[in-house]
Length: 374
Image 1 (cartoon, rainbow, N blue to C red):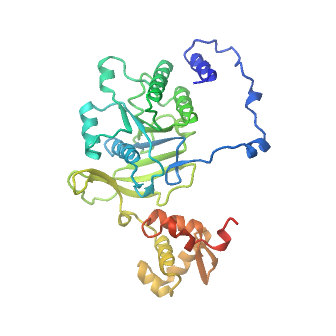
Image 2: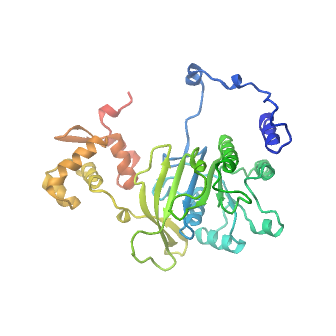
Image 3: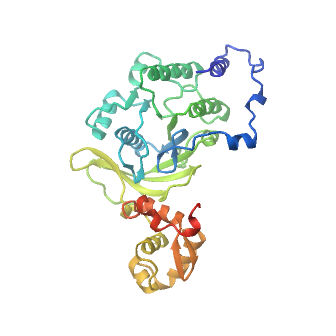
């Protein structure tokens, strides 16, 4: 922590006069366009696919009992175990996580994590709320003294070689005390602190509740600086689930990076054949639009007669031309309409839907000359 961070914390804690001017002039922070172009700034690294940056601030929200805690717990387990994929997205790096709980009992936490990973994971640390409540000092993220308290924890973990990359706050409603969560002014203090964690290089994931209207609850300013917002909701259909399984719909409300495709799908969490809980999805469960099924056909077999393609993707023959036009307009196909070729974006879409069929090692087979950067 440098002197400017310490000064900011003292100001937030009321130890400095609010009217005292900052010691460092703003001019020191100016960087010219020419300098920033020349500056050696590392490229953005992604934990998941090309949408979840290492240095980020985002949110998962849902109504109670939909599966948001399961989702986040499964994520940190997958990151700790360096699984190849999480819900179809490639995991690019094995990292340590800190799971900050605000409401569950120790028994519930143990049961859930044990179901996801019967063997203890070295790369996952948990800050449970139960003992803090018993001591009469539950964590309150809006209080500046508790923010400083949390920074001490991060410093201690770093000194022990246990610095987390991912910090999950589950959930904001229980980790905020004596504040009006609908008030933008009060929420701004919390948002500024969470953004400061991102600035320090952390991957911050806030778990939140949905309101009666289905949108995220509370002040609108909460999501303004976020890199992404993921919404979970109960299943749309009445399709029965297996014993012990939870099913929910996943969608993206906000995305600063390239929005994943598919950006809406059904996910399932439940025991596999060994009894270990897995978070999975199946392309057959996704409402894949016909034109994307047509794109898959073109990627596999190339252009065929409209009748053959219509029969394969189960649509009317007359709709094929319309689907081809839309794929061209979206940039997933390029070239002549009489001989369309898969573009880079088209390949990425197919990889997101069907990663086993369209792997990155085969991408050169689909990239056209106009896509090449040289």
